[in-house]
Length: 381
Ligand code: SF4
Ligand code: SF4
Image 1 (cartoon, rainbow, N blue to C red):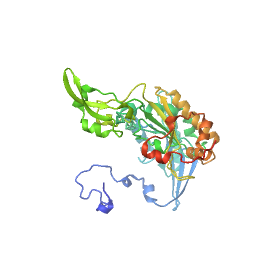
Image 2: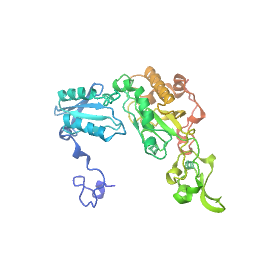
Image 3: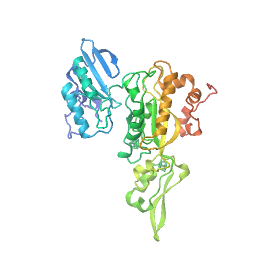
Image 4: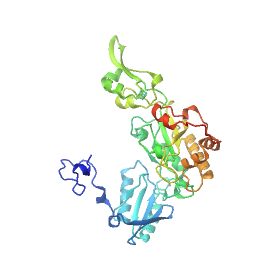
């Protein structure tokens, strides 16, 4: 890690460097009008869903068109995005933290032509390639993780349920009729590479069964001490089993101590944890990063388990839609989902949404539970 205090010079990032590992300095990629007005922006407005205008103190204006994007992209799709940027934006574009693409221009005429062009671009089946929206009080793009296509520990897919949920929410992406911005995220296991802890609605893949132990491979594929050390609840221990009359080194798991986190599988591929019946999705709500109305907050589990139902995850989609509808009908303007639930009380949140409150929703992980348990008799019904 290069700190200025350690002598690193951001103006000469390659000075003294023996390798070229790591990204180039971000400001090399600013469009000229962004570089020129850096630190000088005065205000911004959302002119219409998906279209922003930023105004500099110098009077310069930049218009930004925001479009939804997939998280897993083909090379041909990326080339098409680059061609659009070349045609209208001198080759510049940016991605937001929610994986929206933003095309920027100083000319409103250019942005209008760009909008007409990209709204006419369709996939072969007829769906929009580049839907415009995701600004202000809308449901923006869903940020998600790798899912079944790539990672080794997912308890649910990522692109599949996200596509199904976002298809359901499509109109809310294109309009700004929510009480406040509403952010949805998905992480396919509780390692939570996605932003589910700080999103209004978080979808989290969960395992519900301990890892299976493949004794034939434990000693051949794994460093057994590493697998033992990886378990946060000390459920993993070394042992020996008889195999064809021979004692082999392997692993034993105390199932009642296991919390199905999958850490040991990360260390030892002979401990697979994915399971068709055990795996599914939990729903969390109320997280946010913003300081508006209240401090940033972590989301809380409100649905402990929904089974995986590929390819369209109907139960998950229906539950998310329902939570969104109840929130939209009851929250005050500018109130994020977590602020609304805290104002009316979580008891009322459960009675309004009709979601069942079960013991599985109570935090029982030793350290954080001291802080998250309610420690008074103040209930709101
Ligand atoms: Fe892999 Fe878990 Fe991250 Fe998904 S959330 S990409 S399963 S580590
Ligand atoms: Fe331990 Fe997690 Fe493996 Fe269970 S899944 S044995 S809690 S490391």
